[in-house]
Structure formats: C-alpha cells, structure tokens
Image (cartoon, rainbow, N blue to C red; front, side, top):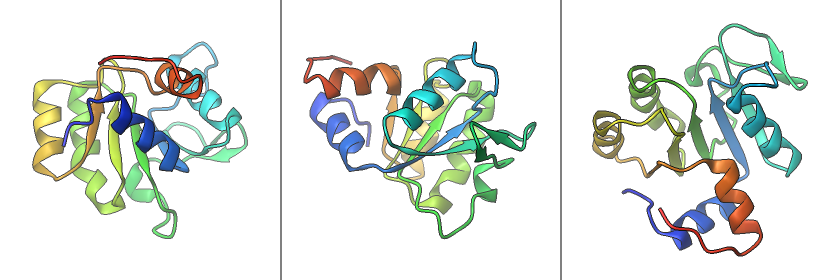
Length: 144
C-alpha cells in the first residue's frame, strides 16, 4: 500500500525504531549523511548500508540490506539510490519484513513503486523522511 496520508506516515514513524539507510554517505555534505545523522540524533537505531565504507558515525555499515544480521528487526528501509538501484533494494526488502520502504526524493520511479507494491511492501515516496519527521514531531500539518 502507498502510505500517502499524514496520519499513516506519523503512525509509521512513531512505531518504528530501526531504520536501514541504504546509500548513506560518510560525507557530511551529502543528504543521505544529513538524514542518517538526524535519525541517529533523535533516537532511531540507524543501520547504514554502503559497500564502500566500514563505519559511519561509529555504526558498522553493511554492503547491502541482505548483509544485515537476521536478528536485527528493520522497521523502515530508507533508500537513497537512483531508481535502477532502488529497484534492486526493493526486491531484496521483503526478506527483512520491514513495515515500509521509504524512497527518498530521486530514488523513486513509477517502476520502483509498482515493484514495491507487487512485493506487498508499504511504500512512502516523494517526501524526505527527515523533513517529514520534523513536521510530525511538531504536530505540523503536511501534505503529500
């Protein structure tokens, strides 16, 4: 299902604890780094996924979501990849049984969204998880 109502997204964010950030960069200038750091700072357990580095902000990184230990319950797979790479992540995501896949701006495409839905994944797209969380935290109205 597409999570496209503010109440649905607020519920997802409030009930989630662990977020795999796919494509998280170690470069503080990159959006994926800023978002990952924000999520860490507000208390989420962030699992960075990046095959090019060993660790980001003291957290072990994994080359792919399939390398995350099976005993780690992932609530949201937050994707910072181009649509072609995002599709591969979406196809792998069901093995983690996440509550949702969040396709960051630029990671989505009609094909990737269709693939997520065909894999029976809930999906959020077209909005930033960090900016949305800030609005939800302040009880601000937002639309999608």
